[in-house]
Length: 587
Image (cartoon, rainbow, N blue to C red; front, side):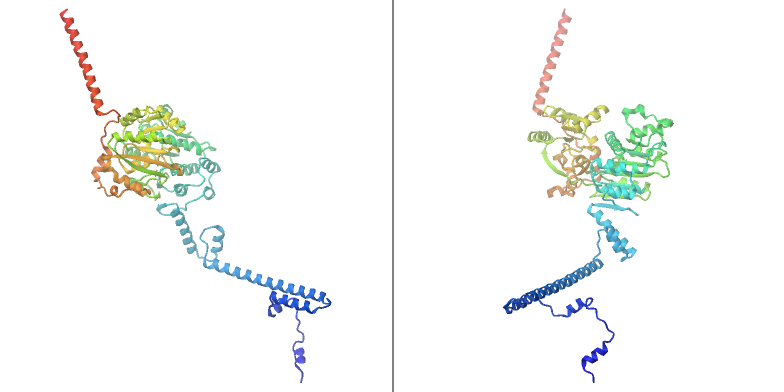
C-alpha cells in the first residue's frame, strides 16, 4: 500500500502551479503578522547573534518582512477602494440626483421610465418657480430660463441682444423675464403682473426684437401702447439701447413731432416698431383717410395695462378698443404688462386673448420689498408742510419725489419750498412738452433735488436713483399707492417711502395698511380693524378725492389781517376818488 506522499504524487500528476500568480492568495491564507511581532522577532535574532555573523540574513529577513507588509497594505487599500465604489454605486441607484444637470440626466436616463423623467423635470421646474416666486396659470407653459446663456442657446437669440441687455445692467434675468420671455418667444399671448422696477420693459422688448429678426420695409410690425408720454419716451429709449447692432426703424408718436407723424404709403413702410400713447394714435386713425395703418402689426403690447383699461376721463378703455379693432392681422399676438391687475383686465383677457398665460411674480397687487415704508400721522393739513420742513432740516439724500393729488396743490407746494434753499421743481399737465422734457432730464442728471408731481409721474417712469418718495397727499387707492412708491427701490436697490395721513384720510388707511403688511412691514392692529368702506364709497372717493385746504405757511389770523388791510386801502382809495369827483363837479 502506497504511503500518503506517493498517493498525492499520483493524484497531482499533470497539475501545474504558478507560484507568481497565486502568491497573493497564498499570502491571504497565511496568518497575518503585525509590526510589533516583526520587531520582536528582529530583536531576538539580534540578541542571539553575538559575533555579528547573521547581518546579511537579518537584512534579507527584514526586506522580506517589508515586502509582506507592502503587499498586505496594497490588498487592504484595494479592498477599501472596491468597498467605496460599491457604496457609491448603491447611492446612485437609491438616491438619484435632482439637480437636472446633463450628467445626472444621462445617468438616470437608462434607469427611469419616460414618465418618471417627465415627473422629475416637472418637479425641478416647480422648484425653480417657487424659489423666484413665479406663479403661472395656463397650459403648455415653457420652462423658465435662469440665465441669458441658456435663453440664447434655447431660442438662438442674436448676439447683439444679449450683449445690449448685459450692458443695461442685467447680469441674469429677473423673475418676470425668466418666464415672460420664453412665453413670448414661443408665440404665446401673456398677461403679466410683476412689482414696479422688476424689468418688465426688457421682458417684452427682447422677444419683440427676436421675432422681428431684421429691418423689413413692410410697415409697423410691433406696436407698444403706454398711458403717458413720459413712459412712452422711456420705452422708446430702451428700444434704441437694446437694438444697437441692428438697424431697426423705431418711431414714437408725440404731439411735439406732429409734422413727422404724417405717414404716406411709402414713408409708412420704412418703420418697424411704433411706440405711442393711445390718444395720439387714435387721432391719426380718425383722419380721413387714416393717417396710419396697423394692418401689418404682429405684436400689440399694452404697458401699464390696468391704467389703459380704466374707464372715465382718466382712462383709455375706448381708445384701446379702437386700436384693438384696427390691428386686424389674423396672426397678431397680444401681451399685457402691469404692476397691478384689476378684475376688468382679466375678464378682457379671457374674452379676447387666445389661450393666454397669466404670469404673476410675488403677491398680486403688492409693493416691492426693497422699499422701506412708513406711515406718518400729521394731524391736520398744516402738519404736512411742517413734516416736509422737518425732513429737509434733518437732511435728506436726493433725489426725492413728492406726490400730491392735483396740479393746483403741486403749484402751491412748489411756491412754499422754492425759498428753502433746495433745488426744487414741479411737473404737471399745465407745463408744455418742452418744459416737461427738460424737467425730467434735469431730475435724472441730478440738477433737481426735489420734484413735485401728480399722478402723471406715478406710472412706469424709471428714475433709477430715487432715494425717497413722499406721499404728501394720501393716495386714493392701493393701486395708486403701489405705483407711487414704486418710483424708488427699483432694480433691487433700496429705497424709502413716507406717507402723510390726517384725520380725513382714515377712510383710505386700511387698504394701504394691508399693502404694507403684505410687503412685510409692521402695522398697528387698529389700522387693520378699521371698517371697510362700501363699494359705492370707494368709487366716489376715487373720482372725488378728499377736499383739502390750501397749502400755505401763513396763519388764518395773518391772512384775515392782511385782508382787512387791503379792504381799508381799497376803501380809502374809493373815498379819495369820490372826493375828487365831487370837487371837480363843484368847479
